[in-house]
Length: 546
Image 1 (cartoon, rainbow, N blue to C red):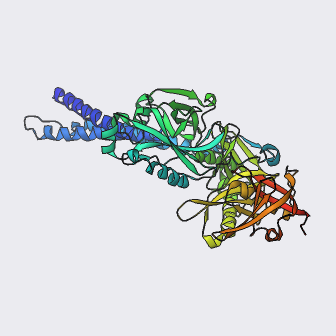
Image 2: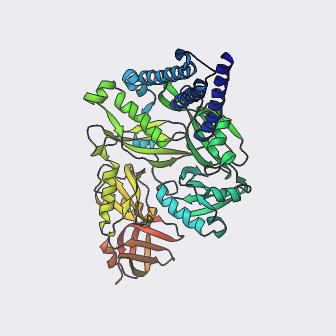
Image 3: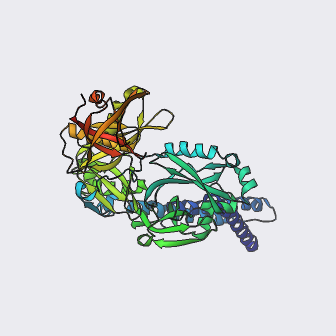
């Protein structure tokens, strides 16, 4: 009798081990007491063992040669159920005592917020090469167009839907690796691997395919041992993975940056990044870094959603839990999206901060370093982002363009939203700038340079001090004036006797129509992407021709 019971236990354990391994292989839960998924996995194994033991016992009970007292029939199954109940109790109690209700002040202290002066801390815009405006949807359109031109690739691979915003050689770029299109494409091509990645320039709205000397072996669309997350889980079975971003270093070598979480409060509370895995998808090698020792070329360690959540803990819980629920005194939170700013060698998230009792305007905004997790708060009161987006869309409402979530720049000491306006196909058509403190000041342009120049001109028209912003000014002699209308936008081109050309829009300055050949003008201008073509910011007659 005892031998049969031991046999049933061993068979139940064997079934549990086999099914448990298959489940682990597919679901890939972390084997970590601080992970909620670990408890559900272990509860599943306990219930599986109890079920297997119960089923095996039925055949023994029906065997007339074996008689077992009724009270002992479910002994093995009960042990599994009791263990499952214990694990569930730990999960519930651990979750309860990790809650904000008991640790509001500790949640609020997870993020350290530094208050800074915007006009002093945020560098004034000197060029347009570091403004990352393109959203992921637009990047997908441009990237897919590039891949579509490569007939040998488009039939076998697709581009990963998640583009990573990086700072590559001091320029903002979006990168995404190729993926196998389906299981059969993986089966046919996994021996050769994934050949490269796509890089999208959000400033020039262009994309390029980068072929790798050594192809990627481990990607998200790989199967069995070639699957990225499976390779990571078997290499780091106890780590709690957060985000996994594809990046490249300064030489263009591909890596996955994997953030690992651990709780800062009790068993599950205030999960934050503690370590980072830098994984080479070409050969499967990896290195684990403490969060403070990540190499400077890495751009994304803290996900934007986590950055916003940590600030919201600070903004809502600093006055205690019940104040966040009932009184809301001095409670503030971020708006529900974020943009990117490239400062120095780092990528920063930008989002507005508003009172929890009102969402019509911002009381300031924060930027968060995506690599170090550093926060800075700027107390600039003004329009929240969606109001600014509406103002930009209203400027060209006849075209039906849609604004993307903006970024933030400093133009002559003025906090300014900058965003793209897209058509129904998702393509970028115009750039728009909106003043944060007065969102009635709106300027648009076909390029970032033109939009910024038009915005500066509008600020001067509204008698806004540009804080001593440098202007490029000279006197020119007009040799030729040409007026060209394209898609309802009339552009005036003024050619100087030295061959330089200055352009302006009749819509924003009707007095341009008064300029004639031979006039001497005093002009202020900004460079464009074309050599010797400049955007006319302001002008006045120095002398008119007869």
